[in-house]
Structures are given as structure tokens and as C-alpha cells.
Length: 202
Image (cartoon, rainbow, N blue to C red; front, side, top):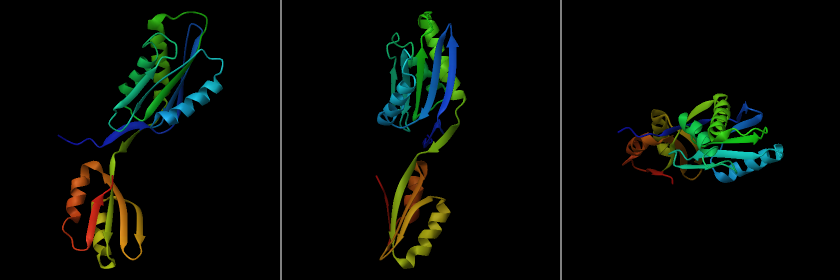
């Protein structure tokens, strides 16, 4: 079975809008990775839309898609947060939050109407977003002496990894990242070499 070491998310903030029988739904798709980051965005939107009736949202976090939550903010249970999350999941996204702000237009939409409105607003925001693929990487630290630098640099080039830092002092230290599915290949490449030590960082 092939190891999955990438995920989809959105590159930057995008917006959508939907209107039904006077009620207005302003949707905001936001790339973020945790609730603390999201709370700042929600508070800013609540300030911006201080007269709105509801500020509902959903999110999915983590590269393995394992963390999610929905919030109906006073709407009937599952009438807002669940259809919002459904749009995130339909596009197979993570590290993504969707917030939908509702201005009540005076006419009740019913649960079905509300679910459709929140869904359409959320979908409009995501349709305006740029979806990108991110790799899940491991980070490595290689230590060697000056005579081994050329060997290490040749291996790094062969493996097509990304150097994030190098220190050439008393000894030589290289820090680089590689896609998670190639971790064993990287470790095997450096295995058993004299005066060259590699370890995967937590």
C-alpha cells in the first residue's frame, strides 16, 4: 500500500456570497492550522459584521485530516456547521476553515432552506479559492567532518532534498527535509558511512 504523504489545502483567504429570501450569507474560506489562529479570524469577522445574527463555521485540521469541528452558533443543530464542513470534505481539504456570517432577512428559511444556503455560500467561497497540494516532510540532521563534505553534498543532490540550514564550523552540520515516503531511502543512503552521521528529527 502506497504511503500518503501529501494533502490538499487552500493557498489564501477567499470569499463567497449567497442570498435567499432576504437573508444574506457571507462566506470566508481561510487557510489555518489550529483553533487559536481561527479564533482571531472569527473575532475579526464578528467585529466587521457586528449586526449579523449568526456566525457559523466548520474546520478540518492536520495533514491526516483527523481534527474537525462544526459550530451552528444558534441555528438549528446541524443546519449550518454540518453543510459547511461538507464542502470542505467534498474538496478533500484540510488545514482549512470556513466561516459563514448570516444576516436574517425577516423570512424563515426552514431547516432545509438554511442547510442549502450555508452550503451554497460555503461552496461559493471555496470555488474562488486556489487549492494547493502540500507534502508531508521529515527533517534530517547530518553531521560530518570537512573531508566528507563533498560526499554529503553529492548525496543531498542525488536525493533531491531541500536544505534548510547548514553550519560549517568545527564540524559540519546539514539540515534538510524530504518527503515522508522517502525517509527510509534517505536513511539507507547515509547508513554505515565513516564520519557521517544522520538522524531524523522529531
